[in-house]
Length: 447
Image 1 (cartoon, rainbow, N blue to C red):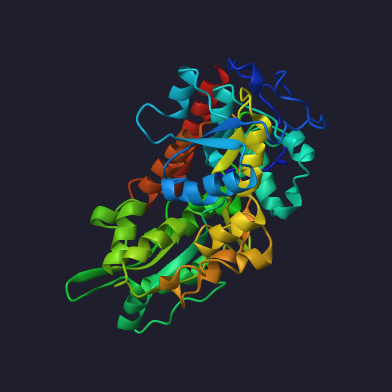
Image 2: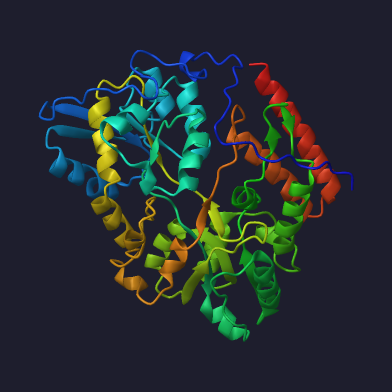
């Protein structure tokens, strides 16, 4: 197999690439009069001056109950002069694109790491938040360094354009009844993917006319994120998919899907929703997932489950998944930047983060005392190994730069799915994906 060697991922401070984006704020170092350079200080607004802050986030990021508990009530208590206006971007006609088109630009917007920088850039919303951090003595050292690296990469600038509210924490969930049924020992904290594959083989079998399946590790993007595997060289504008690193990733991840009986019928290709339901129905023994599944399990007391740490890769021991957080950014057009920052600062206070932790939202802070509070208010989870979600370090995000993460994921997923379905051999799947990635790069460079 003639696969070229991958290059090392470059440093996370991104080099701006000007490819004709029509937004002046997209350029490296570009800023408006409302966006001071790093190091400039802004004078805080008068503390008692009434001000309204428009907060735009999807209903999934901040359901109404969470918004009141973790945002509105704490802000009202600390800053009674700030009135919060919640904008649910999940509602019809209220997407960020539609709000900007209508001239109704929020003060704070929330995006997940992949789309964050591109969305802000393309809509002309980029704002350098670092001067406000200095003005309000905000301590970035409270975050893990890997999280800060990801924030800079996600923002697409060499300064921070947002701060994380909380993060989805990852773990390996397992159904104890299936392990007991087949006399297989439960998984333990600290296991590697190869060990999980061995367990999965023992648990994938037909019993009483029922097909039991050993593992669902999620799509190929998860190993890419865990190992921070680069998919493009943005200096040379060249795909890096046809490399040893991706060959090894496909082989390892494929070994988890190509167990006989595991990927058939409705489970031929990775599908998180169907596999979560299979886990709840008692036919899937293990699933690598995150806190959203944890919340779903609150309503399924019939499932006899527990969890261990997210499986590790031998190339990156101690590393779990990357930061998977709503990143809160202040828009360049906001007329209430100081108040907006005070809202974000309140969400990131020890008090609010501790409350989030107690109720199952994983903190982005590295304080071990706060981490120890995880899930303590969720009485239905007493006795579960919830601490497993707090033990591993964050992986660092791979730069997307000018490539839409949705297109990148589509190319990689299609190639991997064809490989595990035996529709294409490994060499062909990677070579064709590499060609498609190069076409995407060339297409984006023309714009």
